[in-house]
Length: 301
Image (tube, rainbow, N blue to C red; front, side):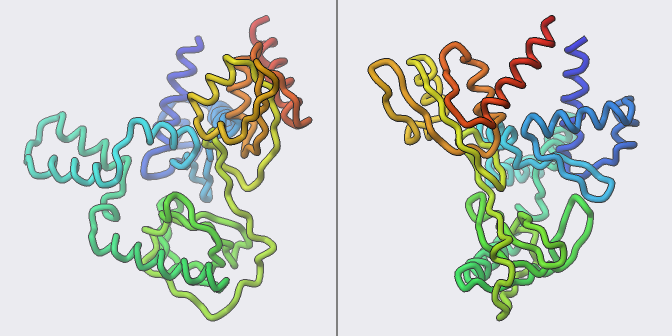
């Protein structure tokens, strides 16, 4: 039954968001599922807009995935609130089941070795300052002893930093050894050293874009819609930032033109108000909606 499938999907999602990773076999053992089903669910998460990370043989879900970002903003504590709550729980000395459960829950969501250390938070500030200078001067930098929880490694990375993300808590860099663009958390760097060597790979730098539906990607795609009053009202109420991309089209309709990082977010909006939205472009989005409509029709036969 579908509710049983949903339960397994949620259990897998919870496992993949813990402060560790799991191999496919470990996930099979935990959930009593076949390897084929695990790969199916991982692919389903990717199609739904989650960032599925693989480090060697270990899988996890990136907590910066758009769904988690929106959920955390609504339900989660800020880092300062989490630290305060953890300290209060520690001071109680209460070993009751409820207190132990709360401690475990907080420990699974936040890395208090970083958050609760004044010295480390001050170091993060110094890291941002050095990275800012490196970006401004277009110089390479060394991220000394970068701690990666997914691969359980600590290593120094030579990078070309070029873009801050998430209120300066993360930095987008081109990593020299791998030849890939990666996002690094500033707090996981022991220190940062700016080199005198200028960037050599600026043409390969790929920034990350986040659209109004909280989906992120290295590329953006144009979408144009014609909205009636209902669709206009729902969109501007749920996504206030959309207002800057909307212009009137007569007395009863509006045109929405914007760039998106994924068709998934805006696709959900269109499919949810299908009778109130006319898809004008682009061709890629038209095909995406047509494929989703065909898939939905197949499921209800």
